[in-house]
Image (tube, rainbow, N blue to C red):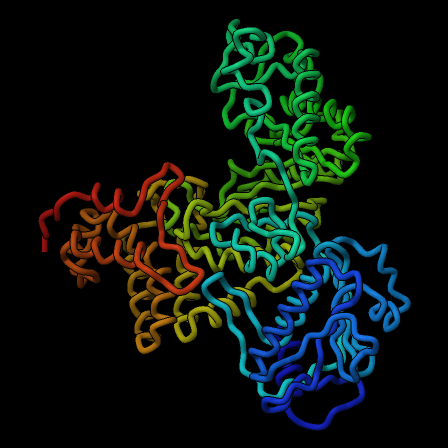
Length: 600
């Protein structure tokens, strides 16, 4: 990406060869953005995005015209239509995938288009990013200033590696960020003007949603898990082999699909707990297949078969999660069934194919032999403390390459989804989005690119911090819900980390925008200092170290709270949750109580 961007910059001045397009020259617009008859709302949106952003880059008012009788001499043709077909007659437009992109130079014309509904949106974004634009976060976009902008000859035909791409972070739900970073996850705020997204009625853990015990247990206790000889209506599952239960689920799903015709993904998945049914029929099925996954898979297969003709464009998904993680021996998911394989037991300080995660890696390989619709649900944050350092920064590249190599076609990276609080959330979401499109990108180069672009001169010391934390955490099993008392968060480690962040702040002290970004990201290290204050006080005294932060924990906490919950740039939302348990920043500092005695 850097190499291609450099081509743009190198052609900012000088003579033109026939395939180059001069967009603008010192305030004078030379190119026209063109839409065509029959353009979709997404293609119109992509054209407007190009017009606005190219105008911003060049300082020239780039014109946008709709369905002209003749193409202007120098034109960017956006989307599918008659002009695109004339210029690129060999492209089989009707057979393009929904997210395929085409960027093709034809003399002084450039076609920027793709499959429907999202391809053209992604193509326009790709062109802008080749020109140096970066969509780091909803509150941070880099748009270069190029009064003279020349587009070189381009021939880009591309498509995403993963059909489902979901860096599931709070800020990544933003429609503008998602569209520009090719995030099509079901929780994004994308609408049809940005190409839409994968649409699901109920996201996950839907057994009790589809078969609510509050209204049905009294009359149909046999539909629910038999546990220790008794049917239970809470913290358990369904009796998935019960034939009446199966027919009821088919009926419920059919009605939901009729009420929501835009839905193309239906979840028929286990509750977020254990206790699968112990009745004789369920146990026999699980024993025969060598795994409790047979119980969830057989039910979703049944529903998918019954409804596939009525709803041919709908996929039915379920989980391979905790007690159902191991694949069955012979049962296979139907072609319209998606399996979500969940990595919740793994150590996230290492890639998913590392030796410490061998059991999960084996499950990936074995499930991929059974289905071509394998999705993986991975965990990218610490749910016990979103802000706590979760050193998985250098694992994503190897993990995503492993998954793509072994049949995974959808990827969900669950991050801090309740609030902007999250350890290096902006970095993780951006890198994940890039790798979900193309796992073969250099992930270390992506990390450097983000750090330099988002933090400026503070980027290099922050890279040093990431390496420090990754090295200190690697020997340990890094859980999805690690304690703030985790061994890798020792005084020595956090002392070194605090020094690095203070140095990073010094590098951007004269730039309010960059300093604000650094301070927000510094909150995670400070969160651990506040959480382990007395321990660190003692260690500092024992080692004879200079105490690095305010000696008053209360004053330090109040400043921390001010940064976390204070205002920020457009697109930013103050931190409201710091754990999945619902703790707020204010609750956290209130629980700290009064200042402890200072041993120094």
